Length: 383
Image (cartoon, rainbow, N blue to C red):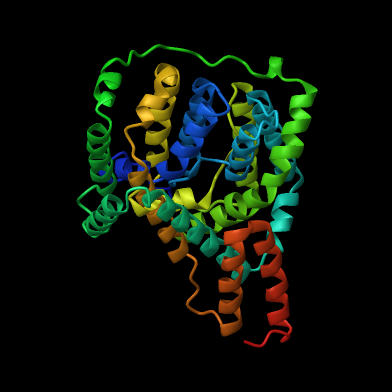
């Protein structure tokens, strides 16, 4: 009997460091919005992200991402700005209910059974549509400084063709210089930073039933279809396509989604998921093992424990133009992965049409993809 093949060890070399920051385009804007608009404490929020990323790196040993749940973030911020009465406690309630919901999907096997209903062309379409969405959002962010962003994009594309050069680290270095030039007071503010150790306070004792119910109904439930398509089905496909020697399954992904949200809610964290676009971003800039997740997680954990009161100043070092380039290239990598060279014409139609729907609504995209695939299989679809 042949011995089981050992998984490649996590690496912590220059490519892993470069790839570790490939998901900042989504992480920084959402975290900044939670902290500045909803007045959430960055302490527990960043510590939760750090622990989740470190755990993902050790468990999966691939560049397995941990991202803010986007629909919840957008809804929470927009409704708060519209004086809808949402508070930080409601967001924590959404985190707790999200964790419980995904643990139920994992324990019952229901999530895995539902995933089996989604045909491959529909899945590829969802992945492609998510890639397009990232690219469009990246372009929107780059439009704030189009000439600067265009030059940065061209330079980054050039550097990506040279594996020995850590493209992300060069991009971030240029971004810091640009931020210091554009914000003269930033040098003084950075110089005034004083690390202060703070351990997150427990959030559960202060939650009310109203916080839990409001968070579940207004935030957690509307997020479920997006998480199911992007951070459950698509991330499983993306990981297993890129790293067939380190496969994951839907049950383990559902478990980790549930556990990390349950843990995050305990210390006042926000809803998190394993978005496929995050893995695309990490891989695009050189990550190939879980070392990249552990690197980023360690940095976020340190920032949460020692710099949580000054996180806005730290984030100021990364201009919108730089974050837009990162997000655009992550989307490009994700869209490029949604290919199936042996697909029939009808299957390619399902992929492209599902991608178009995914830009608008992931839940609608999954439903359309299933129906269109069934129609194609029965010969009802003529293209």
